[in-house]
Length: 454
Image (cartoon, rainbow, N blue to C red; front, side, top):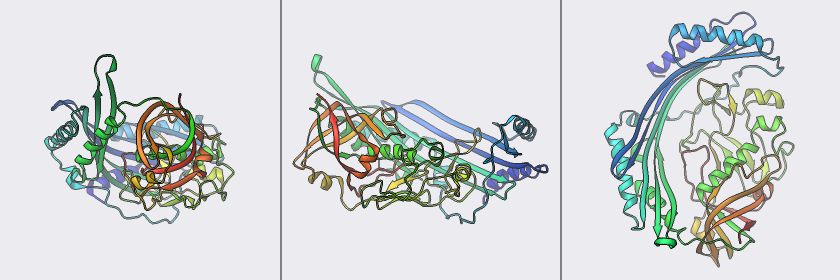
């Protein structure tokens, strides 16, 4: 533990030590910052370097919970936050499941989440990375122009302590670059513009692959030029890795323990059932250092851990924090989430991924006679019902005929149900892509999906 981490832990410990008889207290203390740089035509268009710190305190007594927070670590402010949390507790509604996380004996997986090289990386070099990416993306194809190129990093240090014996602190940082592109073709009434994007993530800027990010941004924009509205039919779809990551994000909401206990998940009564095709294994593993959202502890200070949610097609478990676990009559899976000091713990997947297959996207496509490579989906969350499983969303991509990628198409929807799509998975790609989100991507082949176009 670093000297700075000890400072935060001391603050949290000091609050918890003030618990009165019959009180359960949790103190969550954070300090961190982020850098956002946007470059356009070789010049810095937007630059933000923000810092924040704060403390959130929960007080629980007689089944009532009070919470308060402050965006400062000043001693007098901390005293006020504790007093306010106690006051708020008096007005809380009794809840038989209210309580703090209890130590569960799961050991923390040692990870190198803090990179000194990133912490010391000069601002001028961060700007240069965005400029390099813009230049590379501009040079891939003469039809492509860059809308913007970005560099983003973030760092955070936190400590949590509670009267139940939780005492944990740590720090982490990470960074990524992204570029947005526009591809133009034609003129006058025939003029057309398509958009694309690319990115690269890392614990250090030296892990970036700028060439790949630039190439992806150009390819995504140019390959949709000339896209038309396709005829309606049922076919096999191949989801691009980024689209698969979005799809997994939707699936994760159905495996959320809070949604399950509230009756808001289509899988609420299906533990032990076959819910996906044989060979499909879905894992939430924040201990995997390759995941951008890797972490060693969850939002309540319990050790993060590898949870197998679907194993060989069978639903094995949901993800829980301590509260949802008590309501469900089970134990926390180390999946408490926290947006910062200003909120109480939620629950969710931390670093979701399918177990990858053995073949790349080109090989998967070669086995598809009549299909669609889905490059993007729009309105994904509004077009999916996590309770019924109904799935209908706008999409764009490229038709597949006899194993070959062909004409670009857009202005259509793809529809099925989440239940059916999981069972209709044909194969999972080996092309795993670690993205700046809570799910990794890889190509995914799903049969018998409705494409509604002309």
